[in-house]
Image 1: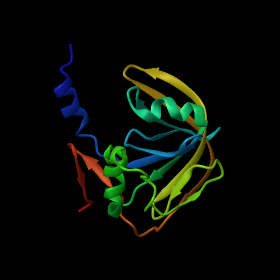
Image 2: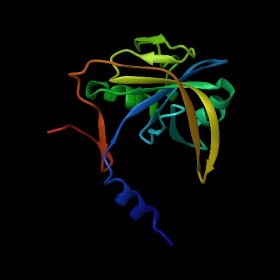
Image 3: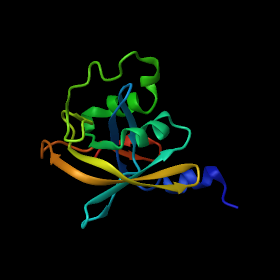
Length: 160
């Protein structure tokens, strides 16, 4: 049997970018920090990410049917922290976040390195997570000179 701490330690050696997945639900806007984002297919254009089955977004996102993946820049660590859990203590976690609406209605965070606006194509079981597959409806890139927000061994890192 694989030890959970050893599992986290080994997989923590894989550096990832950091994203905030956003969507507009019936009760307002939602966001969740995600580093499991990846491309899946070029034709058709598909992406995927994983969501803990215990997360609030897990039940709300399928009802919305769409989402945007916002790839965070190094100066947006505060957004990563906010949507990793700090937002639960806030009346309006989007109140001071500059964003515009994507084609699907999902919030697109200003200053992000890129965004991918998607409709939910499929959901798959992944143990204690679900895998959300999205069909890309629109995308865009931000400042080409900005640095990415990176996560490695349990913390944020800079490119050196």
